Image (cartoon, rainbow, N blue to C red; front, side, top):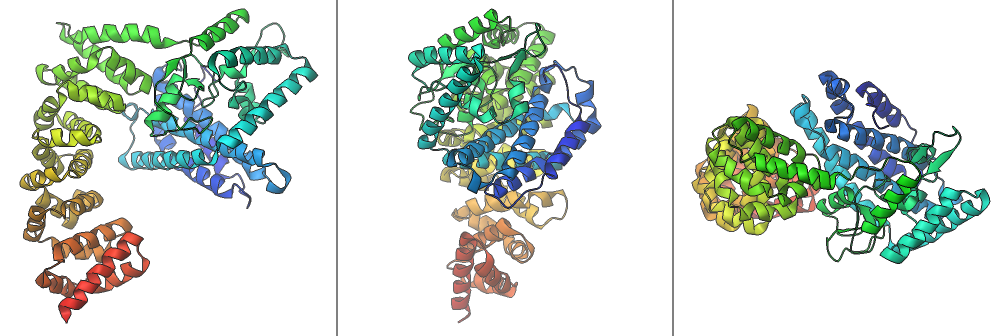
Length: 597
């Protein structure tokens, strides 16, 4: 597939084919249904990309299209897996076969999420609605990965490795296949050096999928029928691709650096292959295996996978030096290129930070008078902050003050990305205190009131996270957050799309006395009753929670919400809501009953 760009029209056809795969009432019916639904969510994304004509016009070697190639591979794997799982019959199959398919669901889910995580939105004209669909699909895929991870136990992994080793040895004896025999030899050599299982899970997962296996074959030019199989220990167990930068995790397993780093960044604490808990997140380069891969490629006249880490690092260091160049054009080009690199992969984010880019980027936020340079610099910091270790480096560089300055006086795009960066940094609890005391909250409230739809959402997300810390609630109230949020509850204009965010933040603030007073003063009760009567799911729960906080120990307010029509929707919520919703509704109804006596 390398060097060939599959057009969007073909991908739309593939998604339609996936949707038409019959789902029998078997063991994996729910898994198949869920995967089909998640793939179908991408239909509108592909249609908008098709309309943009960017895929067809871009060069196939462009790194912007890496994500597209990943998506194509993931959808192909999804189709094969769905066809296989739909035919699976538990009564005719072993437990190992069932768990193998379960692991395949995990790998396909991983591939889809990886492709979508690298989607370059700014390259295409993607609408906000479709972006939300993509993010919904990503969140579902991440939850599914966690669920599948729990299904693959250590006991199963051990049994599977034994079965795989037996299968390969039988194949070597029966077919006298030199490449398989070599695989076993190299596997044994690696086993002694890394103390890892001798046969990779990748072989067994691809063993019953002809097209998947063909993707891993390298054709020699001497004879059309002569195929050379890539040694299975050279393939990353997650991506099933030839490794270019193999690293060892604490369990002794080896993975491609980019894939295992992505796995860890997603919050996973276990080894993908063995499901053992990772004792630490250190990734140790596997120089022995890299040497074996290099030697094997040389001996078989195969082009070696480019390990761009060293070359990329030299290029990144050069770009970082250019950030301090006297030439405005040089600085602008360098920060633009770093921005592009920082959004592509975790590996790039690590190398950019290692090259010392963060302090220089922070300096550019306030010293550069060029709008484009400032916008790119803040976006670089946003992208870099996605990698948790970089958050500490950004904070250590004293970035918060500069980010707040951009939030106050930058262009709208710069302000939006500054808000998003503050949210990312505030995920670490200790940073909530520092950011709250920096003057960021008034600037975020201003963006919440006067920003674009995207800016409002970025500001709301950052404010919600900051207000989890009790000390920041008073700051938010003093900055005028309550009137701004109540306005979003009652207006029918573009503010209406912010009802979810407004209610969520108000529910967090409701425990603060100053916030309660501000809510009452802003005449919040009628708007909350309206949402209780006509809102959906989570919004109704939050409305009930806020009302309970405001009206507890205040009979006058209880009588008022009774007159405004709170009783009927509260009774309905007490019967049909979630556990939290029912609890809030029952408590409020009991208070109303006592107030009316």
